[in-house]
Image 1: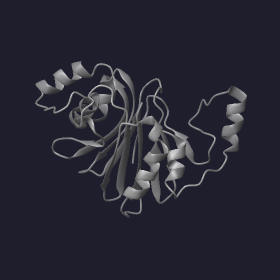
Image 2: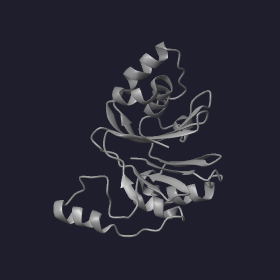
Image 3: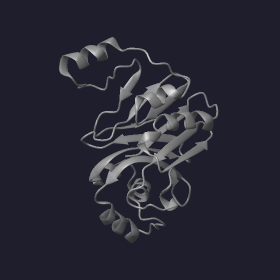
Length: 210
């Protein structure tokens, strides 16, 4: 288990590394081994790492492609990453670690959103395209790994847990009564609602771009 968080300032104001750190500190239990922050103008990405496959510093996130175009923060495991790594290597991609994170990142660079259909695993990730200035979020088909997001108007926020959104500082939790009614009726959520107003859970098998 790892933890991811981030923001995109819609106003064009620079993202705050301090606030990203506040968000990742709120979910530090998800990744006690390491943490990382990346800021590029209005976008900030954060990561809390639980080292599993490659325990070295080469697996540290946020992680960028060799040309620096794509930057990833990711939670999960791609079970068929070795098969995909071999395929990507045959297409000229170079790898410096043994992580599935680096495979996911290069798969996105090679196939774009089509890469999601090639993954056998559980995942929630965010990728920032530094050239086209697009933030992409995606979640596995069974929704094993959580991914919450909120739009405050000035900023778009995302995280592995809702409390990381509240730690950002620009967003205060308020009860979503319709979400509460749904949960009390079904003991679960069958929509993208949560218990909090303006906080949504990205549905399983879905992607979102800002």
